Every structure is written in C-alpha cells, then in structure tokens.
Image (cartoon, one colour):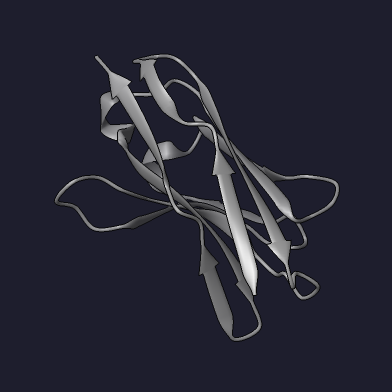
Length: 115
C-alpha cells in the first residue's frame, strides 16, 4: 500500500506565493511519476503539473511560468511552488503518484486565492 501526505495550501492574496509538498510512503520501490491535479467547485479535475522519475515536467497552460514542480533528493517527495497566484487558482489540489499498473492519491489540500 502507498500513502500520500500533502502539506501547504491555505489562504493567500492574489499575487502571492505558496508551496505544496507531497510525501509518498509505504511500498514505493517502483514509484514512477508524481504530480498535482486541482478541482474547483463545479469544475472537472485538471492536471496542473507532473514530473517523471527522470525529472521531465509538464504543466497546465494556464500555470506555465508561474508554477514549478520539483522532486526531492529522495524521489518520494515532490513540491509545487506556486507564484503570482490568481483567484482562478483557487481549488482543492490533489497530489498523485503512479506505479506500474496503479495510481494513488492524496487527500487534497485547499488553496484559496483572494482578490
């Protein structure tokens, strides 16, 4: 079994920054990719950013240039640095991790950007 624990999030003013963290634990020997989705009320869940085990990254168009995803030295941790936040970034952010044949999710963390 795999557990993902997220931290960070909360309330921030527009133009501000926040950093989300996600740590994977348990049976993580074959951990592949990690990343973040977000879901705002009444909207679909969108992939925000992802990072492969080799460090290749991918971003949602609307966050390019503002968000940066990275992985820790231990590879079971990833960070989402969010700068120049706008109210449209308000959502519940979910960390995920992929393994061969499986995908696990964190419990979600609320990010609220006030105008």
